[in-house]
Length: 459
Image 1 (cartoon, one colour):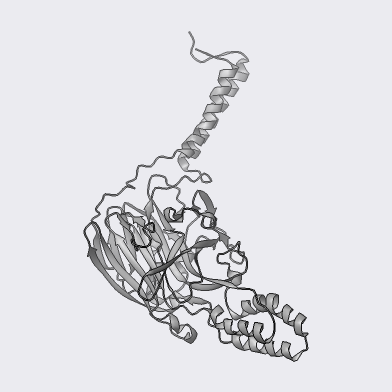
Image 2: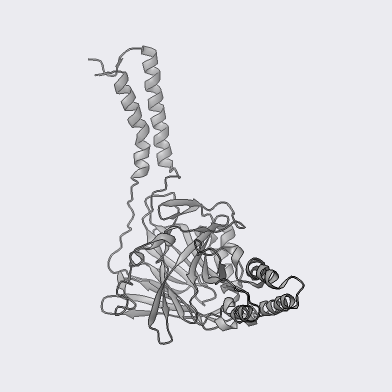
C-alpha cells in the first residue's frame, strides 16, 4: 500500500482532529440515572455533628442541631470531591438601572449607599435648583432626610449570626411519592434589634425525595407552575414573610418632598437577594465544616475550597481568582427567558472526571407571592448574579420587591452527568494528543527523508 502527499495530509488532519472529537463527545459510565425508588439509610448523629442521608447514588449531610443552613453532598461511590452549599443570608438592594434588575453589592440598601445615590444623585440637585443651597427649605429637607436614614436597618441579614430551629426530618409518604421533610426556621437574631422583624419569618423548607416527583403547588390557578424533582435530589422552599423594606421606611419622606418642597423623586426600585456560597472540598477537609457548625466559625470551608470553576448553562466560569470588589455578573438567561415555567437555571460544579456525576444547584427563574391565607396572588421573575471569590462562587438569587406578601422560591441541589468542559483537558485527552503528535512527527520525518511516495507496506 502506498501513501502520496494528499493522503498524508488528510491522515495528519484526522489525527489532529481526533482529540477534538473526544472532547466534544465525552464518555459517561456512571450511574447517573437512578431508579424510581431509592433506599435511604439515615444516621442521626454522623461524626457527632451531622444528619446523614445515604443512598446508592448520593450522600447528603446537614447540621443535626440545625445550627446553620449548610448542605454537603457527594457521589456515594466516589467521595474524592465533596460539594458544599451555604445559605449566607438575605440582602436588600437598590435598583437604579432597569436593564440591570439584579444584585450588585455597591447598591446595598444601607443608609450610606442611599445617601450617596438617592440623595446625592436624585434629591439634592433638585432641592438646590428649586430652593437654593442656603435656603431654609433646603436645610430643613436635608436634616429631615438624615433623620430618616438613622432609622433604617442593616440591609444584610447574616444567617450565621442567627439561631435556627430544625424540625424533622420525618418521612412523608403519599400515593405516588415519598420524601424526608425537614425545615430550618430562624428563631433568634441576637444583638440586632432592627432586624427582629425577621424572627420566625424566614424558613428554609427541605424535601429529600426518594421517588421522582412532579409538584404543582397551585394547580387551580397556575397549572403551568410545576417542577419535577428526581429521586436523590434535595429541594428547598425559601420562604420570607413580613420583610420590612428600608425603601418603605423612606416613602413618607419622599412623599413629603413632593408635597412640601415641590421636588419630584423618581420611583426607586428595590429587591431582596438570597446569598449562597458554592464550594468544593475533599472528604478529609470535612473537619473544617464541622468546626463551622460546632463553633459558629465563618468561611473555613471557603478557605479550604478547591473549586476551580462552574458551568452556568453551557458557559464555563473560573472561580480560582478573587473578584470581590468588582460588579457582580448577571446570569444572562434570567434576563431574557420567555418560557419561564419550562426553564431552569443550573450551575454545575466543574469536574475534571467525566465518568462520575457532579454536583449542581438549580432554580426556576420565577417565584410565588402568597397572601395571608397562603394563596398565590402573583408570579414574579427571578434574576441572579454571581462573582468568583477565590476558589468558591458567590451566587445571589434576586427577587423583586414583594411588599407585604410572602415570597416562596425553590432551589434544588443534587448530582447529574458532567457537562463538557471545553476549557479543561483531561489526562486521557492530553495523552492522546501527545501520541498524535509523535505519530504525525514520525510520518513527516519519514516523508522528508524519502522525498518520494512512502511505502508503508511493501508489496
